[in-house]
Length: 288
Image (cartoon, rainbow, N blue to C red; front, top):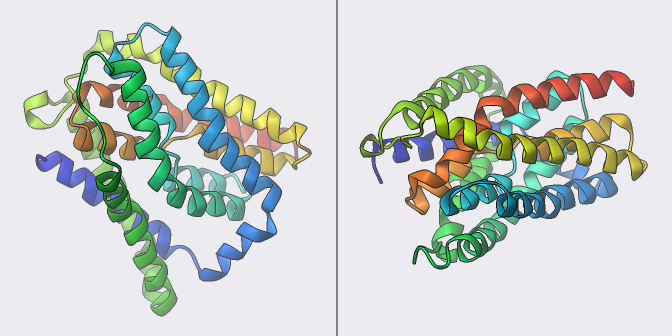
């Protein structure tokens, strides 16, 4: 691991600590109170979206490594950013938090299994690289589960301090994450960057945008057809539509050590926040 990989891990730890420090143990009661929206949201996040990614990767003009990278983006569910959008537009924040809490545990299994499956399907004849399940479980626990639990307990025992540091943490995390993405975008592979070119961005844009729009729009209408409220449908579309690109880069670039696999995540990061935010504003107003 180089410096940028260590920095990315540290930023993810800070972000998930910040998420944990904004939660209370009582928030997890929502997991049981909102069973139908929760289970539907988890199905769309953990099953529907990866299936879409595999199909799109199969038929789009991408290299084998980029196909794997697209799948990796689809199996890294959003956390703090998607929750933040739900908070900004006054969607169902409790449902968003419940989805984040549960999928943070599920990805301990789904990321290593589906990553290895994508490697076998798209790169079986090209590489011997694989993602050891035990190593992956530890890495995800280290950057997601443990910091989130520490944040949760910190908020439990030091609620006043937790409230005071919440905004500064967001500012620091945003700056550091911006630095990481800038280095990944503009740096060469020797400095921890992806070495991505403008031509590659334009080539990857259709696949990443298609996956994003299908996930977001379909999940919204599936939720409505399942007789959820408009606010719940918007919340689910946000959570399914906006993936955790920082985690995807960690998996592809640090754990698998393949800079080309990080490129779909970098391109996805260019537009996904803005399109998700715009879609959420429109749908939340339509159904109010």
